[in-house]
Image (cartoon, rainbow, N blue to C red; front, side, top):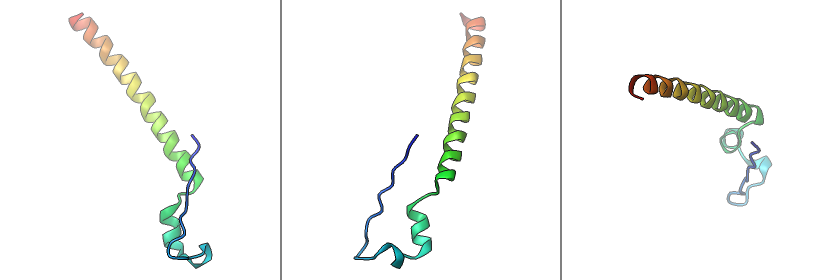
Length: 63
């Protein structure tokens, strides 16, 4: 997943005038985004496996 960021010029500031902490709030490093995306993909995979197991249990029990 590709993420584009738009950084708006606030009150005529140039990027060099912006405090570092404010810059860090606005943009996340790409590596962190990839890790979050990988974590979410892993969680989705685990949830799908759990749903499949639960469906099998329900079908054996009630189907």
